[in-house]
Length: 263
Length: 269
Image 1: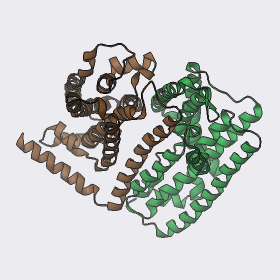
Image 2: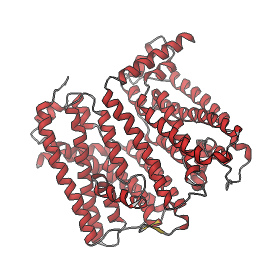
Image 3: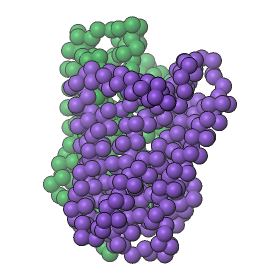
Image 4: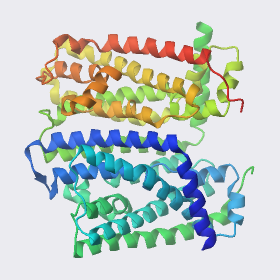
């Protein structure tokens, strides 16, 4: 446990040192938040609410997705893959810390750092420009934070699995792009899922991708509560369990298969 | 000149061959970019069903600006990837650019030939499909002049986006790293150009008029081609400035690039 926490801490500190990159990323995500919000405002011109989502909720959605992009890092993550191709993986597997836990620690530190210096400030600035919806009770804040944590675990579980492809093939980047394309497509990052046809929205919500992005936002803007909220959290937990088990099965097979080049 | 061109062709051929080394990977990449990019438009179309229109434009009309932007951006992203600051930045930092400078061949040509991303065919195809979909919807408003203006617009947009890439690549000579903020103008520019631009607040429109003149490459020409009212009340000839503005930008970008190369100091790594 100590080794895990130390990994988180080191990774967290490293993330904080990239000040210019974080600031530049923040400004970029913020601008994209403005673009998406403008499009939503133009769409909603004659309707106050669509499929239970108000304009204010939709604008909040646009700001939150941009604030979460860096934290979840759901669509572009090849770090583990790179260590396989440059041979670093050899010493990583020898570490006195489980390989899965080691990467989880690295990613948790990175995510936490990004959330604090990029995500939170972004949403605060966004809220200066638009009238956003905020959680109304302490319970809702708590539920949101919990579901945000679950979201990271789902995202990590998926990214870890995708990156493990590099244990088998010398060029897994293509597989990665395809897999991250899936998570980008069905997560609801582009447009609020509530605006899609119901069948597509429902499918995305039940997929690990919607569970990671869409559910925390739904909790934040108060579109799910009571039984629905519990159900949403259970969907998230289910995916965490499934992905962690899959990750371990694939990792165990992969380690036996792995050929380390260079190093 | 002839030698340069044949050399460029050779460099590109090597790129294509190496990218086809892993056929499964390649096919997956083309398919994924086709699907992901295509999904955005499908998602937008499905969303528009709930609202009917955006800024007074229907789906066929939005598809025009959307398709032409995707198509042009895809072509640019395939041919000018050498200047893609996402990969050029790291190349400069690692000293790869120094290596190119040592060769007795024009440096611009070498950078152009250093990266040719064949998988962009997915995005190009996607843009073309959307553009054709749009033309089927809007053909009634098209005259022969308008039809002839469409390829001119595509070329103008390719020049426009490539200027942004070249300027972005040049900035990395000083920053030694890619600046993510540049994405606001390149990918963000592509995004705003995919909608009727009068829906954006004045501040965003001003940025994309005076800092990066994207509005002349998409909105004004589209208003003319689609016979749409122009709530911005700008003069009619704005529709025809696209080729001149993009050619000017391209020349300016090349000048900046040459200035950057001249003043380049290696990191020594």
